[in-house]
Length: 331
Image (cartoon, rainbow, N blue to C red; front, side, top):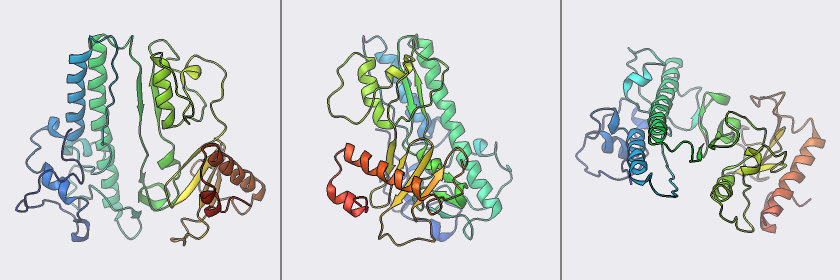
């Protein structure tokens, strides 16, 4: 609905000069559409994408607040890269006089041999600036919801699809190694007018839980056979464990499982290693929160238990037998 982010071929004029102070090898088709789209669009902050998204959302709420019931889903691509907020946001976190390369959409690769220390600090600052801008406009939206008088009768859920590496494990990006916690451990924040305000729960929850949670909150029946679990009993303070483990992954890469204490990154047995990064790994999160000590070879008992747990969770969602064979989980 709001055009122009990242690879959206919205403005396709071939005679628009691309302004991008980065090395030539960074000027790929991944970034060129975005640069064309924003060149003549941005006059002040409200023209950036997150401000446009939340301004439109505020307008929608203003026009629909009097309905007896409504459901609004806001899909904000930011703070995904490109990280190019107004410069005053970046300056909050870096030298305002920085005049080097601008890697607004850095390649997914190790930092060493790619970015200098100064360049990497600037990349981190652009990311932090992007987040700060998005936070500010989420705040505008929530303030408007409160001003209209909806906070005491509206449930609000904030989450995301994944994180990104911005120095974690020496990486920039998200696809080139394990789905470490910086990628897979995402926020789930729920505001309910009557339940659990200000509390934090130690539960394994997943994005698939949003659907049944919303249905139960508005009094609709939850369909049989879905994999998600409603969070309403948790918010009500009931001593109920939603699940004993959560599975996650990326097709044709690793298949992963965590029980909240251990996490297993299980790679396809025949996947060729890339710098040793896609080798099956096991981590104990309480003692090793940065996931630096792979215990897959030293703790065979836990590795076997987590492999069996991954197999059971895949069987629970009726994964085909061929997948289990492919993952070498049938022995």
